[in-house]
Length: 221
Image (cartoon, rainbow, N blue to C red; front, side, top):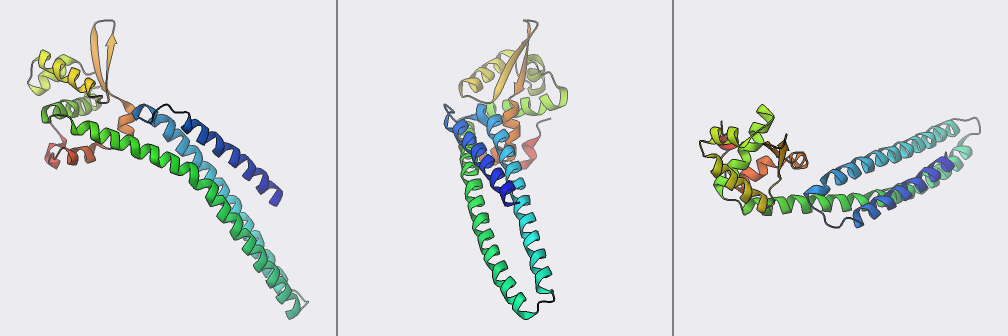
């Protein structure tokens, strides 16, 4: 079992080293890196679970061995000897557990910091938006979920504004690096979308508070 654990631990170290390398190679941590960070986070969580399972199995085997020897026919002397041996094994296991945690924590800290940087950048960007620009962004967010393909014409109609006004607001939002994309269909119709990686952040409620919008304004229509 120890050989299996050591082999797995070695593979985990290599995997975590690759994670650190991937993160260090990022030219910048921004919203576009969110998919990568999320993917790395999931991989690390999976590796951590596997390590925990191995440790749990080892501890269970040690406890079962302790109970077996303590109830044998060799009497109290055997119990004391086995007890000391088991305590030593458990102490060694604690050191293994501690080392495993050290392996796990470092890359997780990298990812946590990356996500915090992204969220802070998004919040700072939204602070620069006017209330009307934020309403346009919120409308795109809601209408895209409800009707799918959202055009300038539909957005203008829903907000009671001219298409030119909507185009101006969208242009301003894009200049401020709001997570909006424009996709042209058949070289004619432009479809407005919110970047999916932004939706994965689940920050809408926090942004509403940031912009001091009341809860009643989470819906515009």
